Length: 300
Ligand code: SF4
Image 1 (cartoon, rainbow, N blue to C red):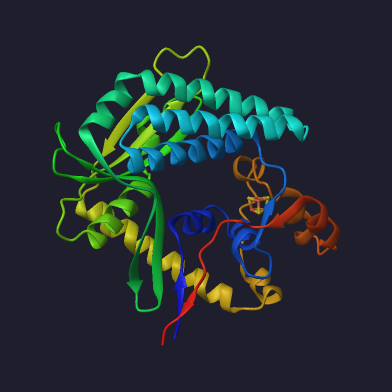
Image 2: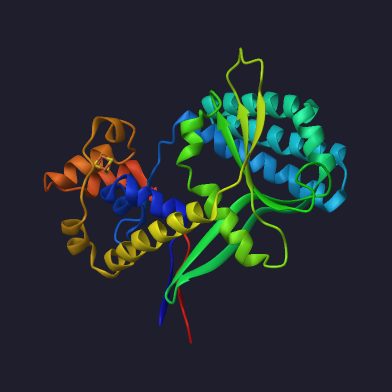
C-alpha cells in the first residue's frame, strides 16, 4: 500500500488555492519561483541562522560559543552574497545579524534559554491521520520547560520574522500550532504537551518592542476540528496526486481573487495555463523544482 505524506503547509496551500497547490505540489509540476521576495528571503536566512545557533547550543551548552558560530555562519553568507553580486540578499543578511544581536541581549531570550532544555532544532515528527496518510511536521524548536509557569511541559516553538506583531485575529485561525501540539502529543505520549509557542522577531526598524513569545493552548475541540479538516483536504490531495497532471488540472479550482492572486508567485504561469497557452518557456525561465516536500513511501 502506498502511504502518502501531506504536511500542514501543503494542506494550507491547497485550501488557499487549489491551482496554486497544483503548481507547487502535484508531481507533474512541483515548482517554486526562482524569484523569492525579501520577506521570505529574510525569514529563510533567519531560520537557518537560528538553526545554527540552537544546534551549536545543544552540542556545547554555551551561549557564547553558539553566538560565535552563528556570527561566523552569517558572515560567510554575506561574503558569498557580495562575491556573487547578490547585494539585496547581503543587506537582508545584515538585517538578520542586527535582529539576532538584539535578540541574544534581550530579556525574552535570557528568560527562554535559562528556563528550557532544547530537545531539537528543525525537529521532525509524524503521525498517521488515516491508514494511508501521514501528517509530517518539522518544528523550528522543540523544548522542555525546566522552570517558570510552564515547567514540565514539552512545547513546539515556531519562529516568525515579521514587520509587525500578529494581531489577535492572526492567532485565532492559526492551524500550525494546534497541529504541532497534536504531533507532540502523539510522539511524546508520556509527556505533558498542551501548548505551543510562536516566537516573533520584529524587523521594523523603529520598533521599540522587537521580540515576543506567545503561548497558544489549543482546546481539544480545536485540535479535533483542525485534524478533521486536515484529513478531508489530504484525501482530496491524494486523489489529485494519483491523477496525471493533464487530468488534475481540469479538476482543480482557481481562487481568482485580487487578494490571493496579487501576491501569488504562480500568477503568470496560472494565467497562461488558464488560457490554454504553452507554459514551457515560463516554467523554464521563472521556476525551479520545489525544494519543499515530503517523499511518500511504500508500506510492505
Ligand atoms: S494566480 Fe490566483 S488562481 Fe492562479 S494559482 Fe495563484 S492564487 Fe491561484
